[in-house]
Image 1 (cartoon, helix red, strand yellow):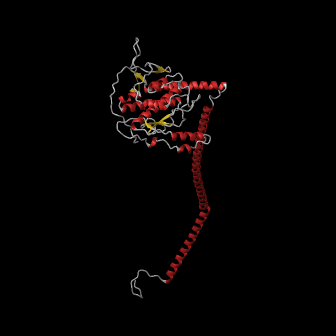
Image 2 (cartoon, one colour):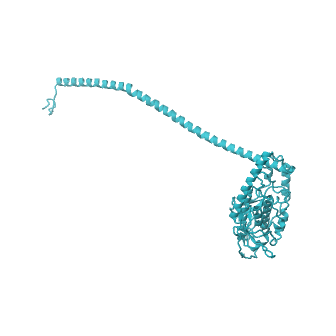
Image 3 (cartoon, rainbow, N blue to C red):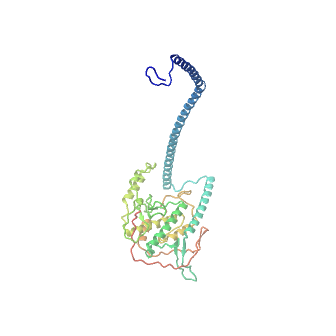
Length: 437
């Protein structure tokens, strides 16, 4: 169809009435759809107000409550951590306070015991019932100690090897005392043995003596310390503890090596076994320091004024060995065994007599009846005399004869073993070990 105006072909042409009709229909449809839309919108708003809004409010309140609970739980966890820290601190303070109280009680008890032994000959006896109960308890403890000592002797195999008793008027021969199948010679015979043998047998003996004094509750005048800070770890050094002037041993507080070496090295105590400064005597937190100030001052003055001379490498081991002999002699004295000066060098023989004593475990420094601190005036052996006798390089001392099948306390048995021990002779002089641990 051609347009009369533009003369172009067009597909459709509407008249004015048709367009008006068409526009009217579109307006009717638009109005109808607008009404439907408004209806749906109103229904949606009504559904949101009636159904969704309460649910949203409920979820909002629930979320708010959950946040509050989380905050409360976080605060509670924080309070628990703070309470735990405070409990730990309170527990530490209580333990420290209890430890200080025990230390103060022990110091006061030790001071009162020392003053009591110094001023009174003997404590008053307790009442009859208490005395009987204490006596029964002491007997039970003594029997338990005797059993422990029996097992200790069997474990370390302390026996006398060789020798024979007197037969037919002929004099008997002495055997050699061994511990752990190693011979411990008297001081005069030690140069016949190599240093490794001496170190090994001395280690066994120190271990045996430490356990024996632990079982019996005895405090020795000379203390053995190890460079490894544990029993049997490292090398042993020995020195005096604090004590009175009886016996003349308390001034030998410097540590001496209780071991040997074939290499020439200076004798210098390692830092772990060096004696503490005497200034600690005056700065000690002991609560009885004010009451015993005169005694402490006199003790410190005696230590300073009577310091032992500087020991040479050759004599330091001899001094340490003398300290060990003095410990064994004092231990024997506490168990009612008399060891004369001429027999002090027979260490294992003296320890055997201690284990065979009828008074084994009766007296102690830790249980009733208590012993005075080492060493009391009744102990006759003086350390200077023992050191002089040991330094004099004596020969084998005469020893009392003990049959090898003797039983200690009814239960310690040693099997006699006849053997000839050949030991190498060394003409070399010994040198001491400088601990490098």
